[in-house]
Image 1 (cartoon, rainbow, N blue to C red):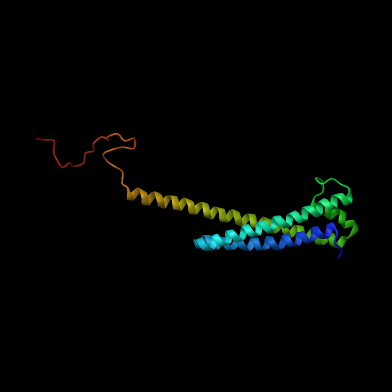
Image 2: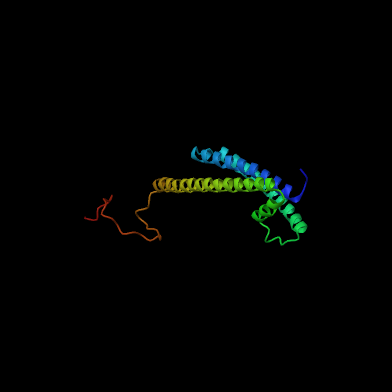
Length: 171
């Protein structure tokens, strides 16, 4: 296999698929850590996700460089050269490579979609947890510091309630 820009694009797609599969497993593990309220594991998975995203960005830059080379080679506009258009142009030259690229692209799109769905689910878990924590905080702080019956929220003396007093006014 020669080292053409199309080959480098296909290689980048393969690397992206591998990295995104790792990312998908990471977000699935994150769901388990969130449901178990395992802070250390959640933190470790967040760090792992950040490292994977950094690697994905690097591979994406490789892919973009290969596309730039392809733009010069084919003497075309960079803005109009999508992966689908590259696949269509390669189809006439090398149908097998075109089909491999199409399969890789479809697999990558599917994996990214699943990662997005899992991330949305995880976000929902975190948001629900935050609501529960806020409610627990309100319950604890509300009971720990009872409201004053002498002063109201603005600091003014509140009206007396009909509660018993230590000293009676009837004398």
